[in-house]
Amino acid sequence: MHTAIYPGSFDPVTRGHLDIIERAAKTTDKLIVAVLNNGAKNSLFSVEERVKMLEEETKDIPNVEIRSFNGLLVEFAAQCDAHVIIRGLRAITDFEYELQMAQTNRVLNHNIDTLFLTADLKYSYVSSSTVKEVARFGGDISSFVTPNIANYVMKKFTIHSESK
Ligand code: PNS
Image 1 (cartoon, helix red, strand yellow):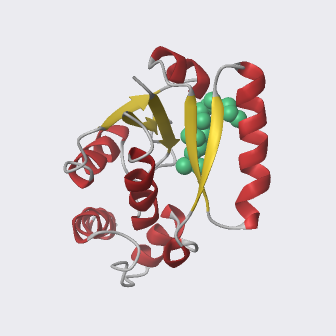
Image 2 (cartoon, helix red, strand yellow):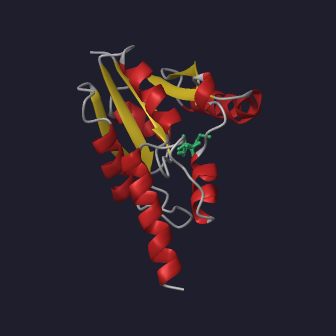
């Protein structure tokens, strides 16, 4: 069985991420979406919340599994028996960081390759950071995330502003 892994912070998952998940899932038997457990210090959502949101958004894609991971991605990929890492590229500005990460991962584990999917043009400007920025100031995020995710994001900002 061919397994690929799509890692990220997904804080929160955007329409751009979902587009990459749908397309990547068609290229492999199993796609593991791997959510970085970064201690939630700088994250709006806990790792459990990010996993739950991804599970809800991908429930109709049978060969997608959502997992969280700590530590090195290549070690987690090897544990999952995944030989391919999927990353999305939006613009040339993504490339330098992505290339560095792909090269580093390849040095760390020669059996794992990174495959890049180009983001759909309509999502090429969307990022989790801009979603949070727009939501923080009460803007409309419906173009960037699904209605379900928008609800979660708006709830966070309502809670944050009520507790001030
Ligand atoms: O969505 P992001 O934040 O761009 O995803 C970055 C991610 C999670 C893919 C990257 O930070 C990562 O793989 N972190 C795990 C630690 C690791 O393996 N680092 C070595 C690669 S440079």
